[in-house]
Each structure stands twice: as C-alpha cells, then as structure tokens.
Picture 1: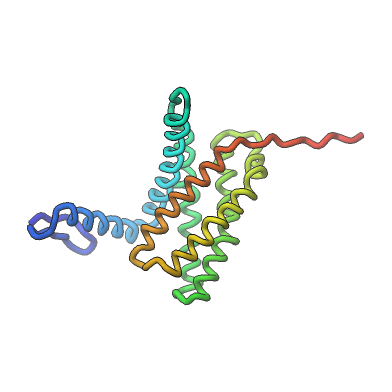
Picture 2 (picture 1 turned 135 degrees about the vertical axis):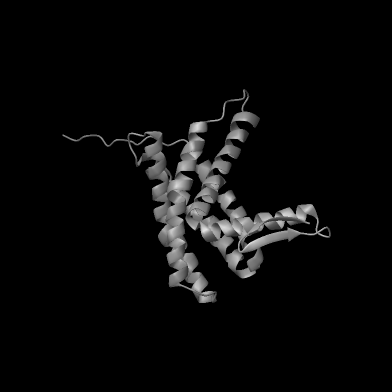
Length: 212
C-alpha cells in the first residue's frame, strides 16, 4: 500500500488498485482541494493556462507547421495572454459566477435560462471590453480602442453562436459528473476562437475629412 495527501485525511492505494487509477484519483482529489481552499488562485491559474495554451497552439500551427520558414514563438504574446487570464479575466468571472450562483440558486429550467442569458448578454460584453483594452495596454497601442472597434461586434456575435448552444447542451444533456470536463474543453475551444479573432489584422481607422 502507498499513500498520498488528501483533503481531510490520507488517500491510500492497495495492491488491488492499479497505480495509474490511484494516481488519477489522487490528482482529482488534489485539484478539488485546491479549488475548495484556494478558489481565486486555482481559477486564475486554470483560466490563464487555457488562454496561454490556446495562443501557443495557434502559434505552433501558424509559425512552425504552416509557415514556409519556421518562425520563433512570440513569448511576449504568451505573456500577455497569461496576464489577462490570470490577472484580469479569471477574477472578473470568479466573482461574477459567485454572485450569479447566489442570486439564482437551483437547477430549475427557468433559473438556468436566466443564468445563461445573463451570463451571455450582461457579463460577456463587459468581459470582451476588458479583454481588448487589457491587450491593447499590454501591446502599447496608441489607440486603446481601435482593435475593439474593429473586432468587438464580430467577437460578441461569435461568442453567442458558440456559447448559447454549448451551454444549452451542457444543462440539458450533459450529466453533472461530466460537466467539468465538458465546460473545460469548451472553454479551450473558445479560447482558440478568441485568439484567432484577435490575430486577424485590424483595419485602419479612416479619419473623417476636416470640413472648413
């Protein structure tokens, strides 16, 4: 038998338990313990990791796989996504969902519909503003709102097309035990979509002619 730490005691593995299964269960317990004891930090690390992973995967494809000549990874861009994910987005969403779950407790269909609609049409627009302005600040752009003006509507529309069906499937068909994996996978897909939209060239603003 070998043992490992767990919340509230010691987790033991007997000879009848496969080592791989035992390690997986221990890892799951440690993750649950981290989210329970250090929710803000755990959410920050997870959210930041999703965005860094999404940006890194796209850079590998565009700079290493598809590029005629391999290009170096833009580590500064990865750092910017880490800062937004760990320091901005995760904190906004943590306190938002904490309030939302407290305000609309329960799993009734009417309650779920309210939470999904509020999340999509009240929080998401503000989160996208925070995303584009934070990234513009970190990139040192002169016009902090130029990229947001060009891409905001497309990003929000894409978010609606993605998240409304995803969340509907989540609450209607996905078993509660599988929701963490489902939402985590969906979040990684969405992070890739957001990174892809962000990567598209920004159309230059056309200044209006000055009239005498």
